[in-house]
Image (cartoon, rainbow, N blue to C red):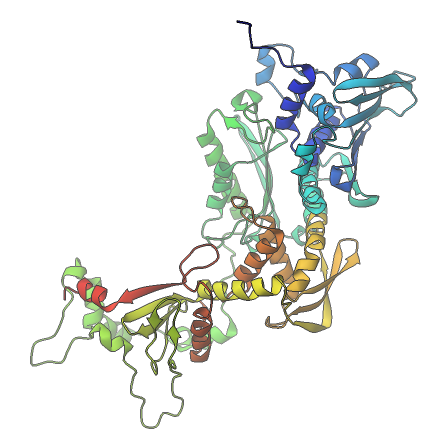
Length: 616
């Protein structure tokens, strides 16, 4: 019997290792940018062609390398940062494993020019499939230029898994922004297919944030600055009014390294408690500095997931620092609770709640039944025989149409003979609909009643409508009398450009206007005009942070985001006509009982179930 275990050839081992480090062009961008930062560069320029598939080039003015170091840099686990095991616990540089260049060279055609200030000539190296094809002296400026061409040229199966150019470009921009945000004292630029997308001059952290995230943040940032013997934290959080419905501009850095941490995200959210809605997320750019020995960054190939020695201390410190910043800048006490002028005219606001009114309410049987201890066991069924029934009327009377007063002229709209055939429900005709808490619609059925959630029901209706439009039957567009100009950060502009054709199919007419600007010429005919800019911005935000658990097509994501955005919100008061239309359109849907995400649109309460609840 011959032995069967053998060492892998270097080229195969390098490709396997590259699969962990270089998953897409953005992975190479991250590694090359971090190498430039480690080289002490003050200027870093990134050039990409074909979303990085054809070319990723990073040029820096750092310290450069000697000819020997340039050649050694492409060997696996060759690094200048680690000499002994203890160094792993004192890492302050971005890279340290010596895997980046070796992984890039295993799956791409690489050229490098590098020169130190003390050398008259630099070194040119050409590597393909991990093998040095050419090495010679060359004339070049101080610093290093690395060009990665034809990514995955030798692994076509991996190349086929790459997304569209627009999608890959967004990933590249994400990695570029994370590095550029961490080092505002370094000039960064990004050029894609000959067009400069980012030009980030050196400056303060606040200036870098505004450069990247847009001028909207200029006057809406709160400084966070706390120092202790254990750790320091600095950066900015957005004021409460900048909070978004989806996780937007949230950046955490530990020792200048971008990290992903749901635990620390929760700490910031907890600091904003009661300042923003529960389903909103604040924006922030926060830097934590602590002894490298207190954190392990070597737990994930991308180094974006780390472990703290005592994460509870970090959590408490982050939460306290953000709370203190919000209080110090008078954010918490100055929250605007001023009422709309229309609301201020209501009796409940304008008239005082007198003692007489309070006593009258408190003396009622209904109030007492719900306020006394163990009240669930003592709710009256009826008063003594000599008296009328209690205020807690039999539940069936709730669904009986009230008799209008003789002088009434505005009769409530009633349900016609509407039958929900797909669900087997039949709504009782000539019965008014009731709205509960401006969120739920109650309708009588032949076997009890249904409780419809108005927002989820409308989301179901809109999803079906937009799906039809997105797959052939284009929706009508209403032209804007005064077109709105929309300016976006570079990353959002790239995403919107990729979505223009799909937006057109559902009724939006948006045209590029140069320099990350767009003109909104028209909107879907069934959308109320006047809020076009915010609607597009919110749509982009929802699309960016769409759940990746299920792989939907771009058009499917857009349809779901549109339905969620345009749906009637909970808390909105509806007229009888609006409620009737909503219920009718819901039961005309193919699947009226659930939203696209699987949440129920209504619940059915049958008469026999209700009887059992009351012990009948």
